Image (cartoon, rainbow, N blue to C red; front, side, top):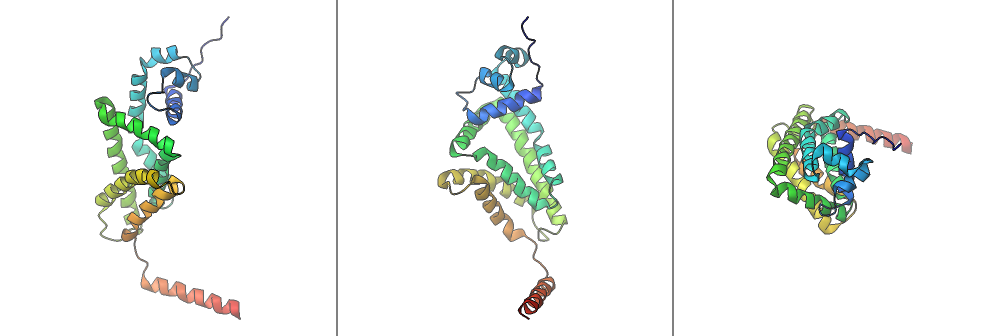
Length: 218
């Protein structure tokens, strides 16, 4: 008797598709490659999704729907809202583990931009991401991490834009890992908006440091 075909969930198939996309460009990616990554047959995926295009559309829809959840998860795992913003930038840097990996990501982005069906999900994802960044920055303002009067929607748009542009400039210069490059750009954008420490508090800390220095020398 032949073994029964292995059953996998849609989530497992999408994870396998994502792994395959990380190592293969659009022209190299096939239903058979995704099936092999998922440990099932290509015919099983064809029966479930119809075609590679339909599978990738379902994947894009799922990514768009979970974009807000990703940022909320970062917020829950970081005590500081601004730390969560920086963590988001690190997540985006995963698209550029190498110049070749970034080139593949951009090739899939080209499809998202040109194909109306894929673009719909891309737009949904972008709007959810922008809203998530606004929530993080609003929380940072409430927590006193950002200066009073900070224009949160404008800053969220700037952070979103800088992260995307920083991916490309990293590919130009290739100086160090992408995460460090993008993180430095995000920090530069946030720096003018950071709340300043009260002068009295800073003076107290300086006085304390001086006392410690005198004790150490004594």
